Length: 322
Image 1 (cartoon, rainbow, N blue to C red):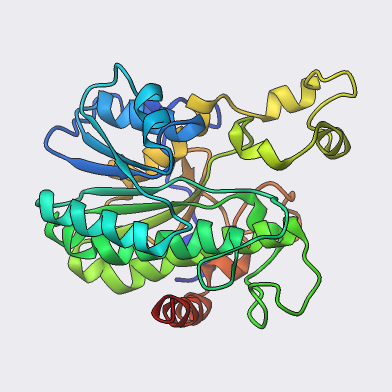
Image 2 (cartoon, helix red, strand yellow; image 1 turned 45 degrees about the vertical axis):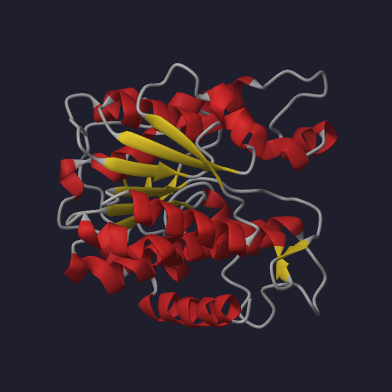
């Protein structure tokens, strides 16, 4: 893919459109979806919108009991146990799902962690890279036969404007020799999410699978659980008295608005025949220019086929050794 593929299609929606609005009039009856992290924040609203349109949705969860409580009253939803930081758990879920379901139409890689203290998961992987990227890649690989069987599946990976902070740190993605920077590590994982979607699309479009990465927007959810109030004040997200500044209120979205770009990427007819692109505000994002603000547009390194291939090869090595 080239940066010139990052061209908006004129979706008719906007930054504050809701997930229910973008799926209105679209029937997902007979469709099967998986939404990781689908029991809180924008994941919950994604499940609500997809199920409301008729899809059968499976939510793999690290805390199945909490997930069942949160999803009570939403028809067509099944909860199963899975921990993205535990490859054995991921592979068991994928195997069990594939044995029980004939196909998978939508895979929504929504779950993630952000700006956490240094920790390692799996085979020594930095926690954000391991959870946000490698865990989801292993999940996708286990579900690939079911996705191919759907004949028209879509994969949506939640990236972020955080990708602006860092390309993949190719020589030390797990911070074994460099000083840890939690925001750089988060940016790396979000660039990896976008390159994953590009890699999926490159490999599988001939098999009917198209993939997209999305920036959901700024939303206050449990994703900020590792950030103390004083840091959010320093970032400008909160005032010293704990209130939300008017400018941030105008820029940030509600969880249902934050779920809209995910749902649009998963269902929009205007994306038929397209894939591998990064989306924001319910449309394909523009390629970044020197005039782009830090919270908008797709940086060149997430639209690079060679980087997508390099990440895939590196990730395969990590997963094969785990």
